[in-house]
Amino acid sequence: MTEVNREGAWAQQAEAHLPDHRYREEIERSLAHGLQGAPTINDRSIPTFARGEVPHFAGERGTFLKAPFIEDVHDVGDAEVAIFGVPLDAGATYRPGTRFGPRGIRRSTNLFGTYNYELGVDLREQLNMVDIGDVFTIPGNLEKSFDQISQAMAHVVQQGTVPVVIGGDHSIGFPTIRGMAPYLGGNIGIIHFDRHVDTQETDLDERMHTTPWFHANNIPNAPATNLVQIGIGGWQAPRAGVQVGRERKSTVITVGDVERVGVEKVAEMALEVAWKDAVAVYLSFDIDVLDSGFVPGTGWPEPGGLLPREALNLIRMVSEPGLAGIEVVECSPPYDWAEQTALLSSRVILDSLAVQVRNGKLGRRASSAGRVAWGPTHGTEPASGTGGGVA
Ligand SMILES: [Mn+2]
Image 1 (cartoon, rainbow, N blue to C red):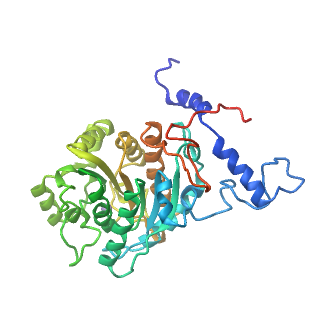
Image 2 (tube, protein in one colour):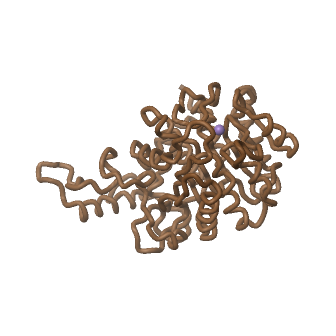
Image 3 (cartoon, helix red, strand yellow):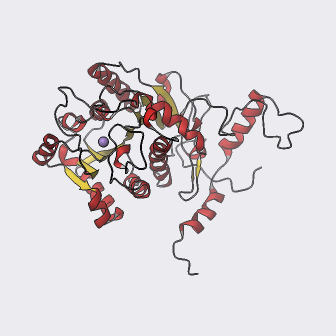
């Protein structure tokens, strides 16, 4: 068999160069805090009380990927990436339930370890990321919730930390952009995955989850010409929103376009539009962009969407130049089956972060506070490998 850039072979070698410092720290901490395991347990790294990442079914601590939690958000600047939830479904016009999205998505990550084979990345070792809990939203009051979300976003961005937002319905796309836009020093592009355009001014007389980009694009440094929408189509596209997109010259790429043109070319086009005269690009991923067969747990499931592999490949490609932030929205656990929608939501975040780490866009800032931390252990250098052998 001829070997031509086989990912499987590359990844098999790449693993040997990943550090394991944080893993060993975790074992030490588990034993110190969770007591040495019973004498009959041969593996002496196993504690009596589950404390680390393993076993995945136990020791749940409620954070994304069991990442360290920061209680005092004043300290968020010590992390390179901060994950926070926005439990909100007041903007849903049909199925609610996304107020449970953050909880469902975090829980689904218990199925994952911190290492990804084909990307050759171990987030525990390479990325100083934390979970800072949820924004205090106000059920039944969208505008007050928006103000809370913008304030949360502004706080994280002002500390120089990259926000990763777990929604929540898609109405949050406006307050997230509004919160970060003043601190970027230039234009922001938006790469938006969705079956729906979400560009009308109001829906049911309010700024519901069908409206975020109308309002975000009114922000002077978030122009519609830098908005690229991938996966649009089907029978839930309000004509009012289409009209706005036409007038403002946003870019729409349908599922058919992805199929005909191919994911690589689409990713290239998306990056070109989003980055044109922009200093930063934000990823807003509505999980309903996937075919409804894969994502039952969402507000407006729409048949005929992207396949998971297409979506994940696109995510990897558009994440390569780095992102100013990520939001994943519209995961509604009450409508989900077997966590499948939550699992895919988690994958979008994990794959995007891993690609940015692999490309050196993330993974450079070590924690300098005396707390439990992930990621590189010194300076702003990328983490150096300790080899496969454990000392
Ligand atoms: Mn949608």
